Image 1 (spheres, rainbow, N blue to C red):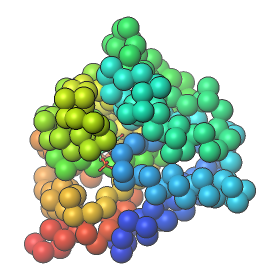
Image 2 (cartoon, rainbow, N blue to C red; image 1 turned 135 degrees about the horizontal axis):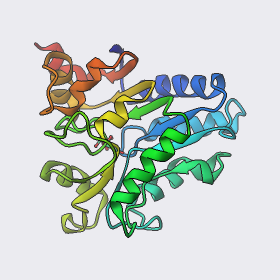
Image 3 (tube, rainbow, N blue to C red; image 1 turned 90 degrees about the vertical axis):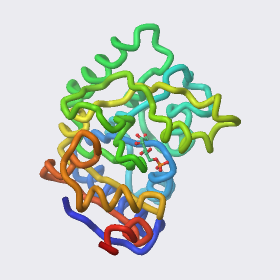
Amino acid sequence: MNVIKVKNYDEMSEKATELIVNRINTLENPVLGLATGSTPEGLYQRTIKKFEQKEVSFKNVTTFNLDEYVGLDKDDSNSYYYFMNEKLFRHVDIAMDRVHVPNGVAQDLEKECMEHERAIEQAGGIDVQVLGIGGNGHIGFNEPGTSFSSRTHVVDLDESTIQANARFFNSIDDVPTQAVSMGIETIMNSKEILLLVSGEAKADAMAKLLNGEVSEDFPASILKQHENVTVIVDEAALTVAESK
Ligand code: F6R
């Protein structure tokens, strides 16, 4: 893993934007894997600015999101489709038929998972996958214990994940308990991975990632076996790793 240390969230977002804009501008038909959550928001904001300044276009870009809550419709303000549309898609020139967010209200969720995999394959695979990390080491919604050979699947969210995500909902009882998520193998098949890590809340996870073993108990640890991973991490997220 190529670890880039930065001062803070803004610098992390800035560096991530440089990398993503560069890939979009150099690849012929860029295929991006995208994440939701607080971590990539700064990346998306800055990417929109670059679009407005005509430094990047999404005309030839295809996207695949990592995950979606089961039971939330596209129009639900807590769905990840809604998040992506608000934070990125509706501000840029992307063709919406090239946008793929798993459908969390599909009648047949197994089929929906297979469809996500098939569409990724048909697009030629993911060129760059953007990831955040959960405090428990999850990537996508692959919670500790998930098989490293998993493909897009329906997952039960950990209690800690439900609690961490409750900040976006009116009450913790409204947080879905399941999601559709790309599997770990799906993520590992990406040609390049960009992991963004910011803030003290991620410091323990970051220390485990840097100093721990590769184990299904800590899903992000598998990233050490991928040959093209860039981690952009800020000082706050490094406090535990660097005190060891
Ligand atoms: C989001 C996702 C999750 C988040 C992780 C960190 O699509 O798959 O793995 O990246 O939970 O979330 P934040 O960035 O909100 O701390």
